[in-house]
Image (cartoon, rainbow, N blue to C red; front, side, top):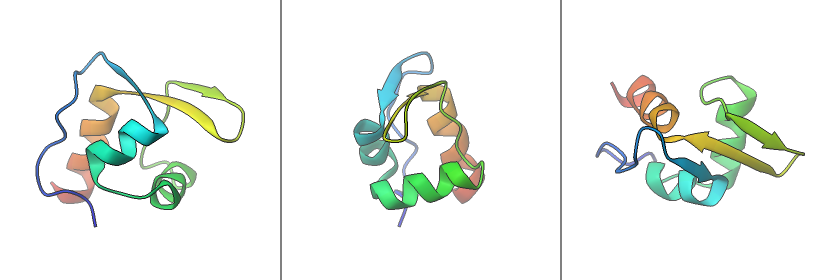
Length: 67
């Protein structure tokens, strides 16, 4: 279940999948499902397993689910 508190991330900061999962309170599997459905979009991808997310995208995804 996603955290009920807004993620404490910097809008312009870059976060890897592990940090993004921690900020949102979700698992890697849930993050991968959100990415596949377009609910969160990485700003950079490095193959199948590596991606970077901007803080504002993390907040947007959080707000879309809980807002």
